[in-house]
Length: 405
Image (tube, rainbow, N blue to C red; front, side, top):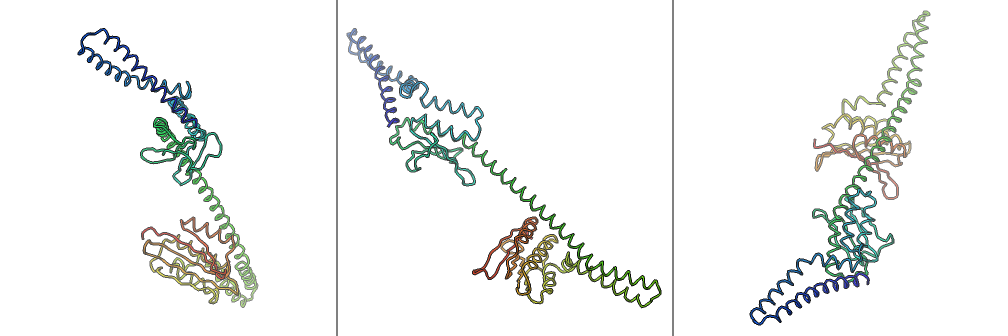
């Protein structure tokens, strides 16, 4: 038990120096007292000698303890030198990642134990742990530890190895003093790590938003291309037929005029139908509930819509996002042999919110889920998925907070 032996040497040195003071002052008092004949003078001499011894001990306490430190720990190994060196190293702009190993090294050297460790608690609940020497430290229960505090808040633990079973008051004072110095340094380290974590989170969020934005742009480009294809296939064909009918009218066939009117009218209806699929007028005129009911009519009863609380409408951008999320999920999941249910609720208590549950027999494809999630996140909503027991029903849950309206 090296630490115990070192402490015994320290106590022996302090005791020896103090005894030397007593012997020197006491010997001088004996010599002077022997030359005196008056008992009263001798009593006063001994009283003065006692006061002198006490004063010398008190005045030289710091010097005697430093001398004991150097005898017990060596010229460069006393704990106060270790503390001074540690403070100097920290003040020399030590890299943040090196502070914990240096604290562990300092506490090991200052207490002369076989192993020392430091634990730092981060604000997100994570723990940083370093030991010196850099080996696997003993279990926490076997370590002798003191708390690391900064402004009354515990930020970690400073511990030494189990070979320090019996710590003297002096050794514990050294450990407490080191913990106070290390607490300041580690509080700054924790702040740095917390800032790193927040920066990493911000970068990840920015990258996610960039990827989400790109997917939405790609989806918009795809929808534009699909719209162009539908116009060419359905509207342009009618317009070409109307153009041919007009040619017959110009050639003197008045009966072809009726064909021209019929083709133009059909082209207009086709264009209206395509436009309704892009943005239905009923969504702007009558709101989300009516627009979803109108959309469900295409499926001949295989898609059921229920809504509550939509008499008081929400923002147009939110209605649009909610509508197209539901439409995309239903179109992707419903085929001729399956069904779907769309439930839309506008909640008031405990907090205003718009919630949607789309339940389908078939699960939506990953591409559809990703597109819907991008649209939901772009409007500050939350998306979740779940499957009922046995996989009989697949649900997509979407929610938006309405902000106290």
